[in-house]
Length: 324
Ligand SMILES: Nc1nc2c(c(=O)[nH]1)N[C@H]1C(S)=C(S)[C@@H](COP(=O)(O)O)O[C@H]1N2
Ligand SMILES: [Mo]
Image (cartoon, helix red, strand yellow):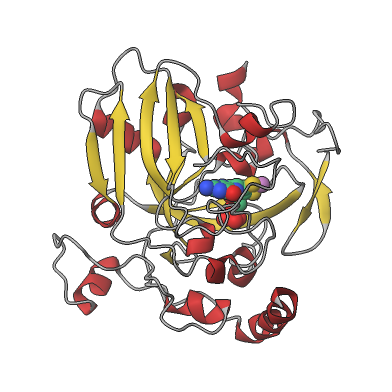
């Protein structure tokens, strides 16, 4: 059933592609919603259910616009992957082990209000309302490459703010060596968290990821709240996710509700499932094959062309010194 319906959706997609040219100023959006800039529940995050959307194109059209200036420093020598592809070719194992239909499988997933709790080895542990983070943080648009460990890739115009800004706000202690991030744990809203696992019945939910402090402070590390000029869709990790473009995609954890500063390297979801296949560091490297396939090339989901994979996914200038 899912296969037949998804084919229908794809037909709709091709027809409905429109350029994302009409960016609206963020203040105007808030004004249009009848909310002051300092309001608490601003109501701009994706609602659940998806207001009766009939297909993913409809759902994407409903998302509130989010204006952010493109930072020209972070660009890619090719156009962005079409929005409808980025919104339909996803990995989000809380909802499915397939790629398609995540927006619909996530219908019960409540993304607002959303609190991000920051704790651990910091002087100022805090809970942040994500809508207020969006209003207060220096958000900008950056065009980044995304390289999945499965050897597909995309180019996405993310909107977010440097993780370093959040880190500064909580004043980490000198003993903080790692940053651990956790996705929501809600078996009643996530189809697969409520089931027996695909991997021998032992998926280590909730999904967790981690970075060293130096990686988390790197200029490229983006806490992401939007894409394609809009609030982030559920399938891409609403309302707030990580994007670390020099690492394989699974490090870019979606729908984060907890960030903890730790002294020890944290366990991570994929590393706990198969440590020999998914290391903690997981930098994109064309010269190091996955135990089951080569990483020398990738398939761009937009152009459908194969192309050589770049060292650190093309971000050697920014991150090479972290690993020398
Ligand atoms: N919580 C969570 N985050 C996740 C995943 C997931 O299954 N659960 N999949 C990861 C993988 S494998 C990839 S490639 C990227 C895909 O991001 P996208 O669907 O926005 O392109 O999300 C990553 N973040
Ligand atoms: Mo991935």
